[in-house]
Length: 398
Image (tube, rainbow, N blue to C red; front, top):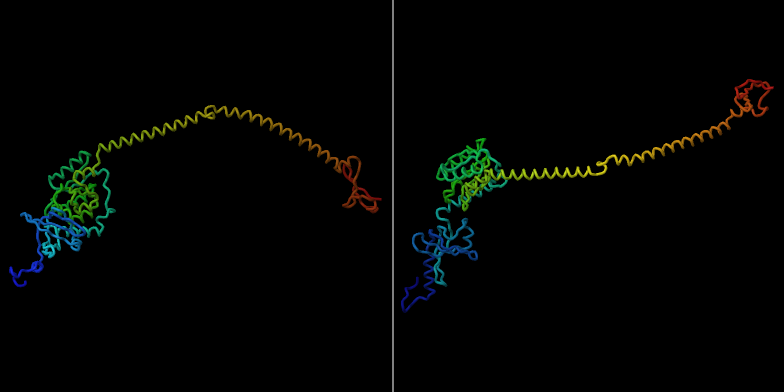
């Protein structure tokens, strides 16, 4: 502060603004609570207005982009929040604004932060992996139901399931669905039904509620119990806006208990209609197949070879008779020609045979092992063999 101004020695506007800014800058940050009546994002900066919860008092608030990036929660108009603000005086415009360095949902900020951390941890462990989710049985014989006693959720599930399939059986486990003991009782009920060999699928149902009441179904032990469940599990908490962690780890998430009954239990009327349609299609297919085979057989029977099989035999019989007669003639001709050739060759052979010469009176003289062709070949007194047509004679040469 400089010397106190007077009418004769007034301060310049800049001095006044500097003194006001210096005074405001010395003020610290404070936490304030109120309702967001405005939350506008422009060029990475949020311009918001915070209204008192009881009185008609509103202050403007600015959230710089650096602060906005650190916030882990999402905000919108109408949210109840707590903000850490510090007043800031803009000298050039002479305006006062509040700069927020932190914003949280009132009463739920820490809870939401814890929930987000748990969600990340479970996701990293793979508990939300779609590959872990098991298919529901087509027609469960026994359904396990975990819900509050005499609750609307229980009535909705039982009524809608029995309307769809009257023979379906239920094994109901009542548990608290809100309060301190709710998570423990729901987890115990899930374990009991999971150990029951007759239970084919488990439904955890509650008829909606506000966010804080639904936090029961985000309890870590309850979620881990559901993840370890061997029986397919359906989460039917019935709250679209806020999805508890049980919805993420369950094998199937139903929007309401009624939706759970419809998705777990098939409709007997629809199934009977599907069976009737399938039987109709099968009958039509079989009829078409048999009719096609009848037509094909009729077509085969109408062919000449089957309609008059004798025609084919008659047409070939004359050919066979003609060929047989011709073959007989050819065979006889061949035999006759062969006989003629044999006779001719026999005559030629006989004409050339030495026996034929002997038969005409000639003789063949042998001396030792040679045929005698000249008397000089034989010495006087040599033994001779004379071959005649009727045999041989012994002789002596002189």
